[in-house]
Amino acid sequence: MKFKYDLHVHTKEVSPCGRLSIEEIIDQYIEDGYSGLVITDHMRRGYYRKCNKEDWKEKTNEYFYSYDRAKEYCKDKDFYIGLGMEISFKSDTNDFLVYGFEKNDFLENEWMIEMELKEFYNKFKDKAVIIQAHPHRERGSKLEDINYLHGLEIFNLNPRHNNHNDLTEAIYKANPTLIATGGSDVHKQEDLCATGIYTDKKITSDNELVDILRSKDFKIIGMD
Image 1 (cartoon, rainbow, N blue to C red):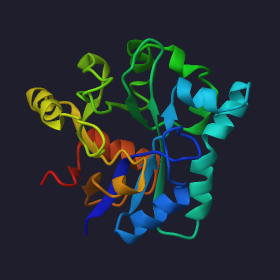
Image 2: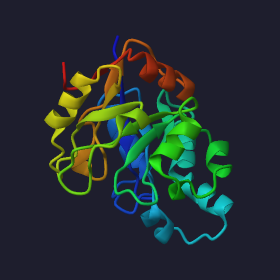
Image 3: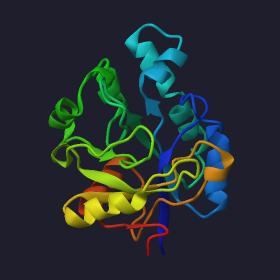
Image 4: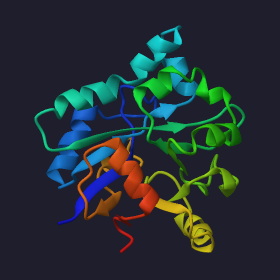
């Protein structure tokens, strides 16, 4: 049996660009036979402009709004909800998917967005998996120094961007020790269930997700 998971999902409750509620998203993924998804709402200045809280703890609790709702919504469902984020740093227009953080990691690292990638990677490289999202997207993205990344999102299927996935895949093939992931980059209805990963092992926790990503014991949906 194959278990399917989407690693790149945004919600309207937290990401300013999101248009779907977390319940709408979950319902469609269950209907399409997925076993779970990871919420990767934007951790960037746009979120803080939208968030009306001043205190970091209050901001963080509001950032968890969709995740907390998802966990409650799925408490009686056999469906994994992963905690992730898509972070953008101080002087960088690039986006990075981070898997493996716990809520305390958010609370204890005030203003993470004021870091640079190198600083963030050196601090959290053993704790988390850090993947550059859509590194060759036509507008606003460029490939970062792979020495400060665990991997690359080589298969981003957001239909409103030219992601040049072929260029990212070529970088991965030249550097096969990197982790290669795929994600639907969900913002709207048309984005749902486009890709993700599948595994032979059922994922039930964020630690298991990190282990599977690090071991590369998965395949990308649609790249068979």
